[in-house]
Amino acid sequence: MQNTTQAPRTGQVVRWRSDEGCRAAIVFEGRTKVHAVYITDSGVRHSSLPKDEQRHMVPLNYPVKSAMRTMRGAGKRLGITKTARRFLS
Figure 1 (spheres, rainbow, N blue to C red):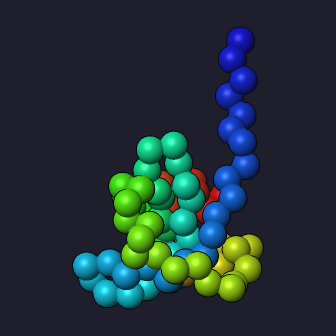
Figure 2: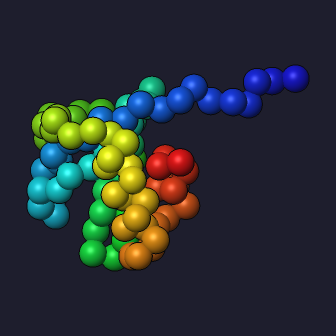
């Protein structure tokens, strides 16, 4: 029987300069990709990005738990994708 529990994900709050502008995101580093969860005008979204995208990210001095709570609240009001919900749980 395999162990199906995953290690707890630790995120980091960053300022991310994307093609669509500058935004705050919670970033989770994977083995081959960087996973960003962020708020848009249409809800809370998730993006899988290549690792070299980290050059456009600047760490912010903001607590991760507070950012996760804010994003979950925005997800209740604006909507949230299933993948973003999984990363914020």
